[in-house]
Structures are given as C-alpha cells and as structure tokens.
Length: 88
Ligand SMILES: [Zn+2]
Image (cartoon, rainbow, N blue to C red; front, side, top):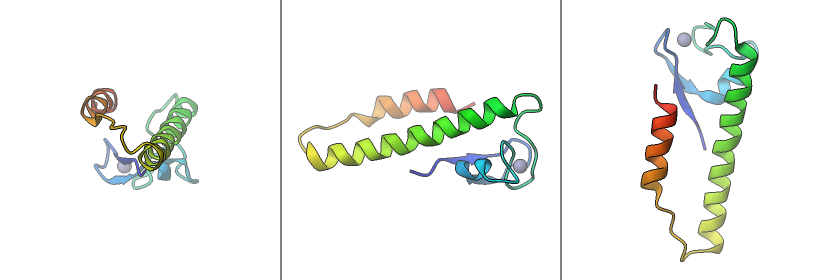
C-alpha cells in the first residue's frame, strides 16, 4: 500500500517511502528540505513505522479477504480515525 505524502515547504507530492532513501532521508525528496530541524531521527523512525504499518494493514486486509469472505471490515470509522491522526 503506497502512502502518499506532500511537503509543506514546496507543496510537491511523493511516495512517503522516498523520504527513507538517501540522500533525502528525513527530508523532502523533491526540494530536499528536512521535515524537522532538530528531530530527524524521530521523523525517520516515525516514517518507517508508518510505512511498515501500512504494509501490515494491506497484508492483513488481503489475507482476511482471502480466508474469511464472510467477515466484513467497516472501513468508514477506521478511515476517519486515520484521517484525524494523519491530517494536519
Ligand atoms: Zn519539498
């Protein structure tokens, strides 16, 4: 599952995983500006955790779809919670 992101400095959109690839680790892959002047290590760890969580969600969702077709996940409140957490 791709996590789309955008930079508050240049406004460009990118795949969040790009912010984990040198030379732009913890920085915008488009303009190169760091996302935090003082907390790059924390930013990188949080980005990494978010990317891993998105992959886990994607994998678990596909697995449940395959093995439990009668189980239906109500995505609406989940998406609303994610939006409240991630949008700022
Ligand atoms: Zn940028």
